[in-house]
Amino acid sequence: MFQKIKWCFFLIVLFNQNALAQLPDFTDMVKTNGIAVVNISTTQKAPPEAENAPEEPQLPEGMPPEMEEFFKRFLNEQGGGYVPRDTTSLGSGFVISPDGYVLTNSHVVKDADEIVVKLSDHRELLAKVIGTDARTDVALLKVDAKDLPAVTIGNPNKLQVGEWVLAIGSPFGFEQSVTAGIISAKGRSLPGGNYVPFIQTDVAINPGNSGGPLFNMEGKVVGINSQIYSRTGGFMGLSFAIPMDVVMNVVDQIKATGKAAHGWLGVQIQDVTRELAESFGMKKPQGALVSKVLPDSPAEKAGLQIGDIITEFNGQQIETSGDLPPMVGITPINDKATLKIIRQGETKSLDFKVGLLPDEADKLAEAKVAPKLPHNRLGVNVIDLTDTQRETLQIAKNGVLVQDVAKGTAKDAGIQRGDVILRIQNNVVRDAADFEKIVTKLPAGKSVAILIQRQGSPVFLAIKVEK
Image (cartoon, rainbow, N blue to C red; front, side, top):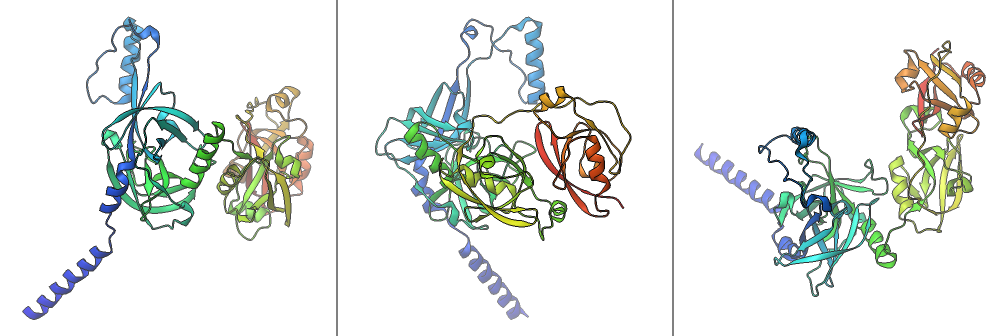
């Protein structure tokens, strides 16, 4: 019996030793690359009138931010008259060349009047902003120094899900903090980040880590840690990094021209859901569904149409709508590109010249709601748009205004009061009478695609027609 226990204990120890031997050791990587990681502190100076203003009131420590803001506003309204003093913030960064070029996030240095880069040897140097790009959240800084330790840039396209990665930064101001994890996913599309195919990891990232490097196991930087997903403000296992190929494309442009330009197609797109795929006769949901083609855009000149489904860009597969913007965005301006599309069940190829992304997209106003009319077959009340509403919505000819939606498939699909219905199953809806004719001919029991405009943005919805 004792002999059996002895052998079991030996096997457990041996198993644990083998398991430990397979775990990565980051010590050499940190020693080699940690010296190139920097701490970045910024100062935003208060306005001149703050110089002689009363001091900001001191509030109890630990007070929730929303309560703190309430009390400050209350005291100010009661005649406190204080003006906020200089504000400071912290972030991370890393040296990319020995002559003093430093990378960080654009949001780390936004609106900063003074930027101080603290090196690993504790030197503190004033930094100059060479250029920033808010769309990719990249900032290139320069400090007056030579022979600085610099990182080696890696290829993020070679990363595999499940691969170990390492982050070094200054979370909450704790410099040279090291955290590790794995690649959770690649090519993530996030709100506000349409031109970045983010690398998702489970590496612990917290406020202050922004702008710091993400290393692969070869000790090469494959991304800049940029965002976290959190309901508490702290780390919850989801962090996102900007791939270095995107970053270096921006860096090269900033060095050459002082700013970054992004490719532009000129469409609004959305994912193809299972129901929409059925309505378009597709075997499976994939691609980017075109819900709007902007006037005088490369897309319009190429002949792209509303309802087209983009499945490839320059030979690269488009699985979801989030795949397309980064591909177009990194393509040089005026380069020729090819789209593969599905149009009414047929596959076509369209060539176009990549345009320059405008500074701001058009903003469309919301239409006013008019009186009710009787329900139609879909359980949706619609009326014709007035000239004023068309001008407000920038809709020249077609479309009807949704005035009310009854309980049923249309409401379940997301049709709302105030929506403008533009198309039904590739049929242009010209007016309320036209809408009624189209609806009466819809096939019962099948999903149909309806193009609506809501608050200036076109969206396709799939509705299953009741029998």
